[in-house]
Length: 454
Image 1 (cartoon, rainbow, N blue to C red):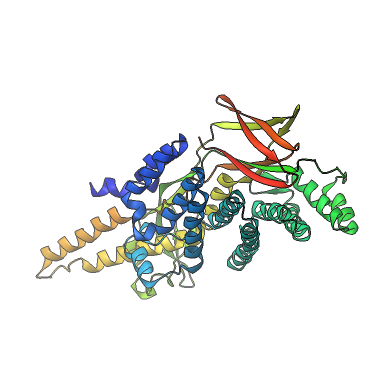
Image 2 (image 1 turned 135 degrees about the vertical axis):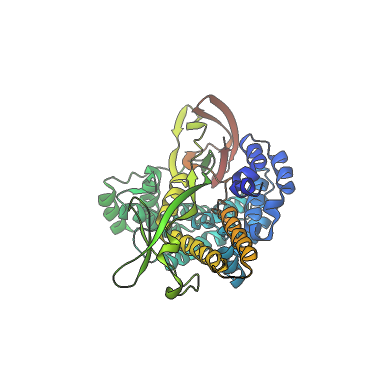
């Protein structure tokens, strides 16, 4: 029973909630979430706040949603790794530590908070959220100083530009659009599975023109291999519509096997049987001493490590029809790709910590074994066996993540007529569906989102 319980992933233990979210039964999902003891545990407080923020957003309870997201935001800013967390991670497994959130999850909190504020008719608060996107970007850059690491989020910067523009702050909108475009240009026009959107090119050139930055218009026309075309503002304003499709990948557990080795310079490292990995022993996180490490005792170590499993979305494409014109969504954020990539980027560091933690457990088991002439041999054998069994059942990967995030986010910009606009939205994939969205054209820029979470 202990073994079976230890193998259960976070997703399987909270599966009823996610099934209801996937099926669009949001009221039932909210009720189910409150019944899950696992997510109410102190170490999972952030996950509870994130899921409550998302489900209340889906229920259009935007005030309540931001109460939860604001608490999650404060939690992620203030949480620190405590001594007890380190001890739990070393003696048990990282699943017992406080969940602090994935880096991309921090950006998505700003996305939902900004949407909530705009739905509530609070543009000033949405502008504050836009500024906080920059602060999150700076913090992430300080954390990930190496090249080729997830340190910015192009989608969040594009969203920042939309929010500034909605608040008629064209200068900051231009800066945000430019920062987003620069990320794409730096990465050969693709960023974590998303190509540079054509709409983003237009928004950058348009805001540069509005600000009178002709040098910037000409420079980016060359960099983007496109030409700026001035278009009269629509009488009813415009709608920026985000389409959240599918669900984020879930974490599963996979097992790796390693042996401890020592090179000619006295450095210890873990090597797998195929020789694909050479991972240094992490002395800092374990307080272990080199003299305690004996290679013969650490020849076979099984370590549990998380891996993502994609949840392929039910729908693959969508378009919007309005006033005899059809508009296509463009991909803007691929959370599925980002999740896989960021886990891969930190693999070596986290695997080193996991292996070193497992080695400490093994050393404790060895220390408990009796000597040949020990009078309490039977007792010590029992203690050693107990430690061995405990180590086996407690070795578990951290399979937690914010799983109600969408698989991908796409967007479009739609010109509106003055008055009532009835948008016909068509989604296609394993089956086709059509539904309407009614938007009042006010002459201003509006922002909304739609969700298909299967």
